[in-house]
Image (cartoon, rainbow, N blue to C red; front, side, top):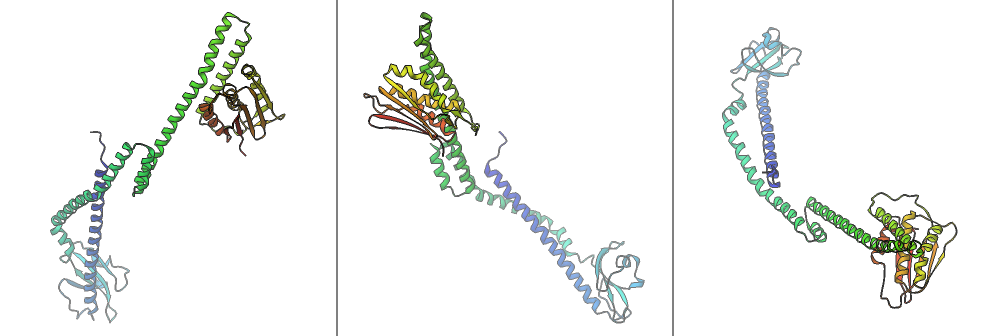
Length: 398
């Protein structure tokens, strides 16, 4: 056993505890009410006898009543009644064991007196408790048993719904079906629990999707530059002065650096810096210099239009990664001709000829990862294809 209790057991015990506490409270209140009523009857009898006393000498008293002049009353009676006004009543036990109610009275002749009523044998509530406690105990046990039966009846439905909720959370095929169940659930707490489970499930699936995308991005981005670096190194071993091999090795290194920067940004949960900034001119000039040789080999020409001193609200490594990815895609998947890059204060546009023998092309995973990178800074990326031109647009937030 693991020491855990079922929901039905917990609710049943709480129900029984509530029923017993309620029974005890009502029993105490009933007992107090009986004592109050008993005292009221006794005091009413005492007042009735006191109202018939005209003089101390001629007074006729019922059985168990005593009358004493206030100045001549025994100390045990006079001391507790000191400084009390006429009509006041007190109850206490005397030294001889008698329990009495005492009234301070005043006769029509102005004589103050104490009227004593010995109620030792009139305490019917105490006597009834002494005689009836076995029956009261049996009634309490019967009530506890009834509470247990009712708890099984009342709690069984909630316990069944709780078990159904657990089974539904564990057996739902997807978060959407779990959310639909939560919306149809009538008990608010159960509905909220199912919604939390669905949200947690979605968050987990989203995290797994991001991990898969990141791994796929790494595989996509690292495979080509690693192969290029390996080929370039092999050429350089045979000819140390091979300029083309050096340029290919440099491009491979730059692409590896950009891939590492992208992974760092994608995997970080930290808020992006509010003061992120980069100079667009030098960044684009460096990329053009890096890719010019590759573009020329495919019959392409690079053209860059950028205002002097233009700044983008992006970290330099992010801007470089996105633009380089787009430019490399335009070179590798585009046709021969002019690749035009225009930078503005609101973003960047890149147009390239479409390869005559290609179908719809995109840079797939690279586009998705570039969008995710830019979204962290409020930027957007879109790609459109016309009949002969492909356009890539980066837009800064307004």
